[in-house]
Every structure is written in structure tokens, then in C-alpha cells.
Amino acid sequence: MSNQNQAAQGISTANKAQCSQALLIQTYANSINEQPSVDFSGDANLLKYQSQINDGLGQAQTHATAYLNVIQPTIIANIANIGNYYALNNAVLTALPTGSTEAQWIATLTALQQQSQQYQTAANGVVSALQTLHDNLTTDSASFSTTVSDLNAAVNGDNGVLSSINSQLGTIQGQIDGAIAGTVLSGLAIVGGTFMVVVGGVADFVTAGTSTPLVVAGVAVVAAGIGGEVASAITLKNLNDEKATLLGQEASLTAEVKLATGISSGYASLSNQVQAAVQSATQMENAWEFLSSDLGSLISDLQQGIQNTDTIRTLFLTAANTEMQAVTTDITTIKGQMTGVTSIVAPKGQTVGEAAVAAAA
Image 1 (tube, one colour):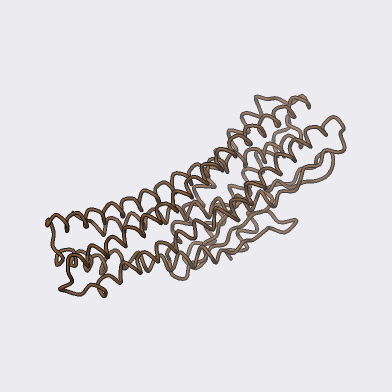
Image 2 (cartoon, rainbow, N blue to C red):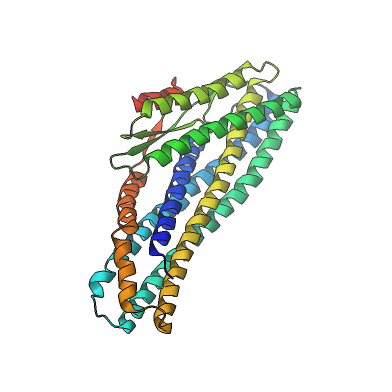
């Protein structure tokens, strides 16, 4: 038996999960692209590490730009695909009035199935692109982490302290990511709700060359028009401030190591978020597969005489008046939200948390 409502629910749930993750990664990517190069030129012994860190940062920015310019647009295209599919689906009842033949129904259902299979293939492309990105990030992040450890050893730092700081930074960043995910999911598909992605410095570090802000993973998302914006922004400000305090209070690590550690930790967090995005994209692909399989079952039932055209028409009519209607409305709203995201970069002298609170006010 077909379950058009269940298929529509699966598509809707997967789309919201994928869009939520996409917004978070977009924010991370923006933060990486805003990170200035490090400058250790005041200490000739650190120039090797300066070069390695800046090379790693350049590679990270290449990955971030690829995500923003290539992968994110395909995720937004999937939203359009959902809208196009359900527009075609909703036209079925008009194209096939009561009394339409079995052959007409089979031809129409086959066309729908072929369309859903094309969209499943496109969704699989997103999975593959994200998996490749994750593989690259994992390799580069590990290399970056090694550079930070080598730098710390070169300045006679305590690697035990460094490991502890990394662990604590990861915990705080996980709380930031969770808070952002909650904000996005609560605002998606809400009419009038808009998103602002905010990036900026978490703290400044006076290194052997100059004062440089830590911007990587200095992230926040504000959902305007849904209520509770200021409270959410304050939560994110407090968490980002907690990172700054953690790095600032550790006297046994040099400023160069603290800055590099912050960048490295943010890089690792991005890798984790892309892994979560792979899972969300896989969920989206599976939802298309379920839909295609469901249509195949309808075609088979008609061909074998298990169901007749009147029964199939009733299934489509019921779905059109319930879940599909909600999905169509949500898709229109979410598409507008995802294409209308406002990007904010905190100006010099303002932290990312302060910028988020200002945006929410």
C-alpha cells in the first residue's frame, strides 16, 4: 500500500535537517574566510610555523569557498526540486479526473517516479560532495593540529595543558553548535522569520608580529521575526566569551599557541559539522528514494489489479489536502529564508557575541 503522506513527511523532515546544517556550515565557512593570517615575524624561530599555519589556513579557505560557491547552491536547488515535484504532484488530480484510464494513471505515475529519481540522483551528488569535503577537512585538520603541537613544543609549552584546552574548546563549541541548531530549527518555515549569520573575533592575541583576532568558529546565528532573538543571541555571546576566557587565562601557553589552537579547534569543529551534514544529506537522499519506491508500488498495484484508479485518486486527494499542502507551504517559506540570509561580519573592536546581540536588538 502507498503512503503518500509518510513520503511527504520524510521529504519535509529531511529538508529541514539539511537546511539547518547548511546554515551552520555557511556560518563556519564565513568565519574561516574572515580569519586574518597569523604573523610571528617578530621571532625568527617561529617563521616556519607561521608559514605552515598560514598555508593550512589558505587550504581551509579554499574548502570554505568551495562549500559556499558549489555545495550550498546545490542544497538550495534541492529545495526548488521539492517544490517542483509537489507542484507536478498536485497537478495530477486536475490532469486525471474521475474516470481516467489505468493506462493514463500508470503513465502519469511513471513520469512522477522518473522525476523523483532524478532528484534522488541530485541529492546523492550532495552526499558525495560533502563526503569529499569532510575527507579533505579531516586530513587537513589533523595536519593543522600537528603543526600546533610542534609550535607549542618549539616554545617549550605544556602539551598536557594544550590537550586540555583543546578538549574544553571542543565542549564549548559543541554547545555553540547546539544552540545555533536550535535557533535555526525553531525559525525554519516560520512565515516572517529571517536569518542573520554573524561571524567575528572571539578574542585578540598579541603575537610576535602583531595583534590578530581569532575569527575561525567565532560564529552566531540570529533568527529574526520569531521571538526570543535577544535571549538566543546572549546565550551565544556568553559561550563565545567563555572560549575567549579559557584561552586568555592559561598563562603556560604563548599567544601564538593560543591563537593557533583556536584556529585548529575551529577547523576540527567544521569537520565535525560537515560529517553531520553528510548524514543529513543522506537522509534527504533516502527520503527521495522512499518516495520513488512508493510510486513504484502504486504502479505495480495498478498493473496487478491490487488497487484501482479510484482508490489511487482518493490517496492523492487525501494527501493533497493534508501533508502535501503543508510541505508546499513550508518549501516556499524555507526557500525564501535560505536565499535571503544576511551575512554580518563584526567590525574591528567588536566581538562576534557583541555583534550578534546588536543584530538581535
